Length: 588
Image (tube, rainbow, N blue to C red; front, side, top):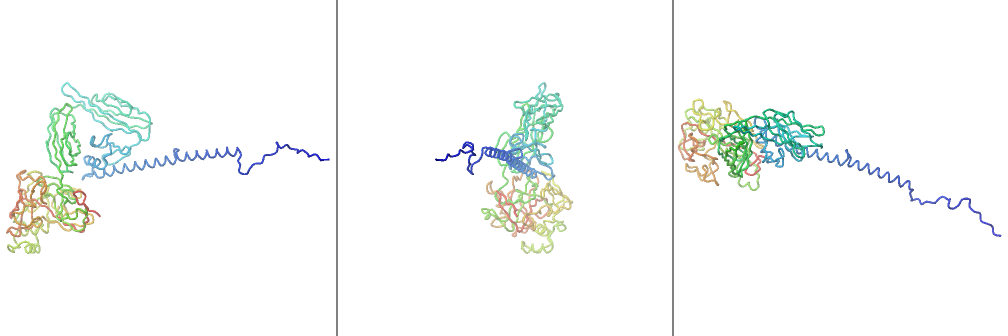
């Protein structure tokens, strides 16, 4: 009999299910997802949180850009410090326009809205900066205003009045929110908030002063407003009415008016690039800095329509590529042209073969472009002068240059040998006035020099009994050494010979091909004084010992006395030069 199979005590349905080792439970899956979400949240927070990587990178980039913008402005500010170690607003405008053209001043380009006074606010690369009178550049955060101070006028013209207006705009940096505008009173000005709330219009009401405050997110900024009562200008006279200057030079227009209101200056026409900076009480002066050649008209305009213009011609100071950047600047004693370190010196050494390559290494001689000084030569006293030729110098001079006779004791030989060898010892003790008054001819000036203004490395050198030719005209150069200074002589004149009639290289043949010694704007009849400059060596074929070039370009003799111009020739050894435009620059 077949045995019955016993039933299991536990039903199959109640038996534990057999799982695969690779499987996961629902709980484990949930836990895994939660962990992944947490990790994702941490990662996102790490990347994009307040202190996340992305925000930190963004802030670092912003700080770098901010610092870079600040450094660019500071560099131009440093380059705008004048000889008196103060910040020159005109030069600052010039440097910022040239090197940071994208910079804004009160929301406009410097062409449309040049800086007139300091402190002022400028914008660059999305950042706002303040430039103060001492040349400090400060980054402005929070809320800033387009102007820190405003002067408004109430202009009276008989029974009629004009109340000036001004718009002030707020800029928010690093904050957001609405802006609240308040004022310390409502007597001097009327305050009107414009659409959007970031700007207000200020209208003059009565003479006085008030302070406007803009507030946002706990940050504030202020602007002081001054209102003055003035009388209308009905007549304007300008001096000068026309002016010709070189690129890089500057001059001042003065306005004479019959009223006290502030004059407005602007360039109304022309292709010349100039910088206009109003100056003085009521803007009665205007400083003009020439940047690029062309013509321009600058108008001085009053509120009721009176306007006068000054016509300006800007010329390029460069004739060719023979200019050398030598840091001695001066005012020509005849033409009153102001020569800079880029325009005041030219090569006697011919580097035309090196122009294509643009570099040169070796020794050079340079000569002043204009006439920086005068020497009152006095024949009978010259043997006693500080710069007179020594016996050895006179002997060599007669041997090398002069065959007419061998009189080394002739006073002109003393002078000619001295000018050739001892120019550095000449004492320049007189300060000359401009115009015809710069002739100095008395016993106190016998064989002494004088000049209007000379700067060595940007410093004005005062004329006194200790000021020598070396102090005036010798300066440091990169990778080179000044080895000597002398006066220009006939041997420097380029041509087939050195005869009296050889004026080709001296006079201006035409506008396109002037000689090396061409004098810019050199008009013989401009003054009543004679115009000569020294030639230290005589013409070898002549019986005269000292030579000069007259105002009409002829080489003439001179052997008595007179107040004559001097043009130094500087010898420099072991230099490295690089041609930059028309100017050779010293490089290391």
